[in-house]
Length: 127
Image (tube, helix red, strand yellow):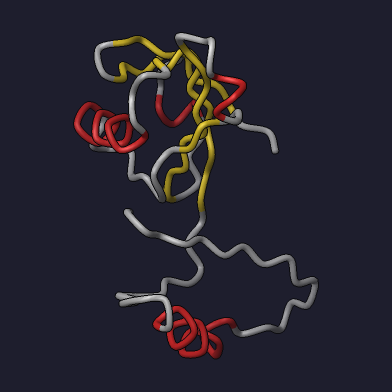
């Protein structure tokens, strides 16, 4: 997950074969360092976690999710919903959790996740 780049297309044409572009994407990304793989066609779901302590690092949050909920496959490291200056005076805030596949709260079967020994409320993400 470290160093992952997620590209989302908005192309309105239905006949685009994105596999044709995998080599171009890999070659382009290799200019910035080693590009291990390009995956096409993966679906991602995003959920919100409220009440996450702001003193935690995003990799620590990601590790806590992976340890406590191995059934949830993270598509990328979580990110804060708000900017750093907006979290400055807060002890907790909200993260956006990106999971691989079509995952809904009903699939998870719970309304709270424990992150670094803190119970955090889970909600659907609406972009």
